[in-house]
Image 1 (cartoon, rainbow, N blue to C red):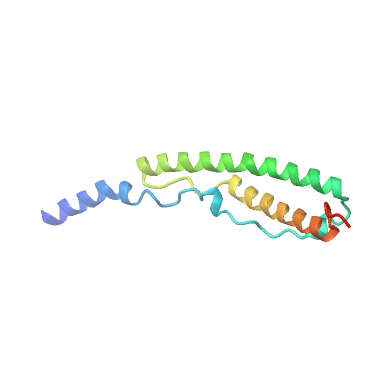
Image 2 (spheres, rainbow, N blue to C red):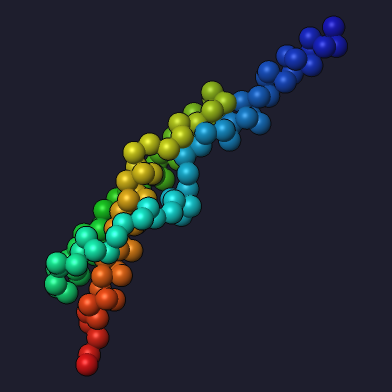
Length: 116
C-alpha cells in the first residue's frame, strides 16, 4: 500500500517538478551563429549602416517573439509537465545575431565612421 501511495504522490507532483523540461531558451542565452563578413564586402558604408539598422529591428521582433514563446512554454509546462521548446524564432534569432556581428566586422574592416 505504501508503494502505491508513493507512486501516486510522485505522479501528482511530476508536472510541478518536471515542468522545467523543454522550456524555450531565454533570448539573452541565444548565441549568434557564424556568418562571414565577406558576405558584406561589396557593401559601402551607408549600406552597411542601413543593413545593421534593419537587422537590429528584426532582432528586437524576434526577442519579443521568443519571450512570448517562453511565457507560453511555462504555462504549458505547469499544466502538462513539459514546455514547447524552441521554435523557428530561436534559430532565426541566432542567425540575425550572427549577421549583425558580420556587419559590424565589415564596418570595422572598412573603417566606416572613422575620421582620417
